[in-house]
Image 1 (cartoon, rainbow, N blue to C red):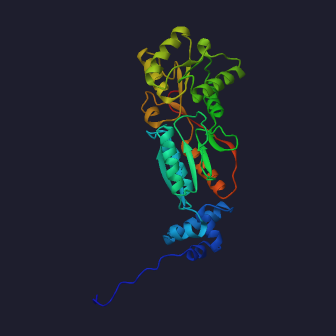
Image 2 (cartoon, rainbow, N blue to C red; image 1 turned 135 degrees about the vertical axis):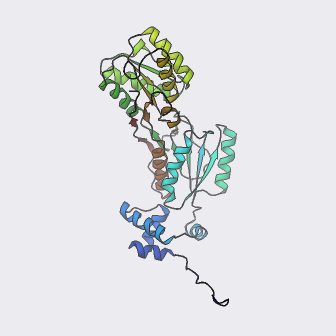
Image 3 (tube, rainbow, N blue to C red; image 1 turned 90 degrees about the vertical axis):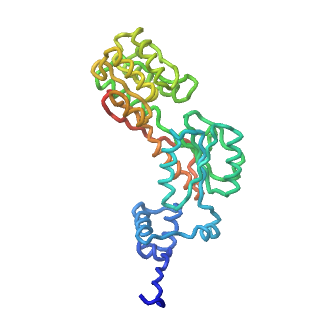
Length: 339
């Protein structure tokens, strides 16, 4: 090649190119990218396919000047280890990514002062909205001084009745577990769960008792066994339950750690799972459920879907179409070898 010959410069794709390839107007393509406006899912999919095919990269600075938006969303969490917030974040990013919206993750570590610090930073960055999540299902007070920035609460609902919250369907999850056990012929079902002051423990216990009552069945031992969210508690609770009611034929546990402790204690006693006693956990924490012996049947609260729905509700609120109130996401029963 001659030294005087320069390689051809590939022109950067424009929004008009995306619109032409997708067969839509420039305005429709813009709305599909921003996640705003109402359109058929297949229309949005055509636009996103054109974006990928053309390797289109919108000018975020120009978009911000034109729309008054920063194209960023804050995600505030109290879950420092990420056990619950990471799946929620992944689900939110899936929904926000189509609009090329970036997510700023802020870990408050459950500290009110740190939360205010992060909130001020998000306000300074002029984020378009905020998703608030945590590691517990306990209701929490709404953020203060958000200056008309839309906020959606995921997993941990807001106590504000006009706020937007997205939570797991706890009653539906318990129904899946109880009906699975009853369908397998189990009639002496124990419920072992976490601390009584945690909303998750309270709700799951209440729903379990109510669902058994619908079938005219009491809890094994006649009471809920509250403790902590640990394998050690699951092992201790197993001994207590079987001393009080040796005919117990199933354990429905408040989380997977407790359930794994129960299966360990049963195995040490020579009790076969699930032949003699069935065990069901809650949360579908793969690290715990799959490592259990046998692998746990468990209720999946679908944290990724909670994050996705929370992001969609936030996009609606940003587009001045808020849907206040509490939105529930269905659970799924992951059937494995323990029940």
